[in-house]
Image 1 (cartoon, helix red, strand yellow):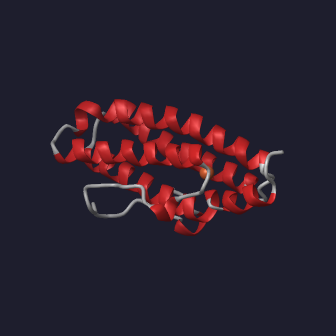
Image 2 (image 1 turned 30 degrees about the vertical axis):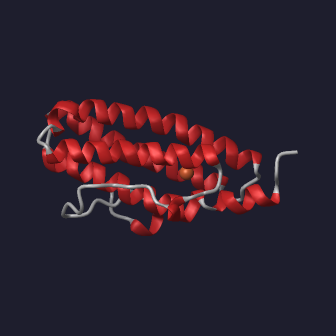
Length: 154
Ligand SMILES: [Fe+2]
């Protein structure tokens, strides 16, 4: 289900890496609003990693999951609109990957709703989101940079 790095789906790592998750310049798309939204997403995950390391993972998991889904809905919608406006040739691929993201995250949500909190699963989720974001921004969102340059809004 979540094992295809080649197709940029979410790829959970077997072990937890560093306990922080930061946006960096390498993720800069060059469209201010999108870069700010990506920073917010990294910030949400970073905060959850911190909560996990402080043993508060269970208390805030449901909130993290719901916030992540709500924020991504808004952010992906905005990004898809930008891709259309700037006539980005990767607009469809972008949409497709956003859908894969939701399918994957919803499986975490369903497991949580049925079985309750599981710390391994919550670790996997946040790491998988980090992997997905890094790959998706670099391979797809970055295409917006050139499209925005070629097709400016007049
Ligand atoms: Fe995207």
